[in-house]
Amino acid sequence: MQETEEEKLEIQQPLEILRSSARRLMDRQIPASSNKLEELYAHIKGAVGDSIDTVSAYVVRSLTMARENLPEGLEEQTLRQAQAAVEEVQNELNDALLQVKETFFSASSFQECEARLPSLALFESRLEGSLLRLEQAVAMAEDPEHFGPPQFVPVPTISDALEALGESLEQIHRHMRDGDKEPLRQALESIRRAEIGLSAALAE
Image (cartoon, rainbow, N blue to C red; front, side, top):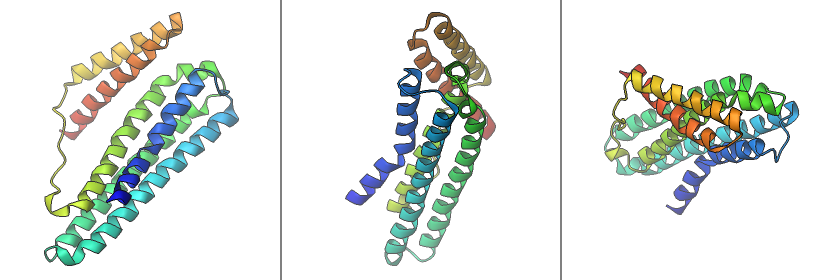
């Protein structure tokens, strides 16, 4: 079980790299040059791939080991469900990586990075949600007999999502006007709330 806990910690590594890199970039501890941004993007993309590979390998290994102890047919069904979940997350993250590459990570100056922070915040939110789903896949492999349908957060309304987006824009403008970083943190939270509402509306 210790190995499982270590793997779960590794799953979150892309998010830790993203947040650390974004913080250092906004604090001007690293240059906002095209080459540096390409390097950061490659680092994050590689970490995402490692997390997906880790979960995929764990799902296959743990279910194969448990096969003899599971009811007939259940192990194959659970294995297909877990693998399908990992593949779905992989496709979603590939799409998110492409979008953030074409927006935030295509910047070539600090000013462009600041202007494209909403794109980075949206990617962070999508990444966080996807990594949580990968951890759910690990839980599915650990206890396949008790793995049920995902529990969804109550659906916020579209108007709530619009209100959150409006708040995020106001907070970003406050940062650009005053230079204070606290509005950026508030903007990230607003964007996360907006994405939850929009995603929930799509799922209805």
